[in-house]
Image (tube, rainbow, N blue to C red):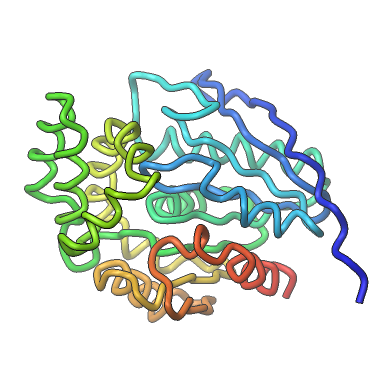
Length: 274
């Protein structure tokens, strides 16, 4: 068996979104294009290990969503600004490769992907990793005020603990374990960006039916150990999307992209090349 081809270092570039905001992205590899959209309290780096695996035979574009990392921001924020950012990167990928990209979104990034596709984004296929749609009630609801107050007070640790209990819905032990890892300071630094995204998530309650009717070929990625509200949202989509398949990552939760990037990449590759 021959060794897999070496993947070159990512190249960094920017593209201007519709409102003039600069969106920074990394490109790895060559071949059929895939655009990756990360979730809340994270950056493009959380998907770089998966991107590196996929870059053996695909051109992979992973960008920092507005308000973090290599990207700029603007005062006005809606799901529309997120979809405009996605469309800007999709256009770059299509122009550079001459092919229509596949589009993947993780967590809130998956909601952004759903909205982009609903509003006409040109994609070859769609991969959704646990969009936190408010299928059984608000994702943030009344607890958003507590979270926002903690952020406004500069108490990012308290904000993140409110989020862990009420938005991620993990146990106190799991929260304490997470707080002891190097990821916690990274989460804390990005807590201000989550307030507006949580409000946008809850506002999608009127769009869920439209998301579940999208005809695009879709892969649903689900963690076997993920919280029930995330699994429930994916189950709703699986039961309603007209052209969907599902892969369950047994033994993993909402972040299999960090824990098993090779396995996640192989599931994506098998789907988009199928």
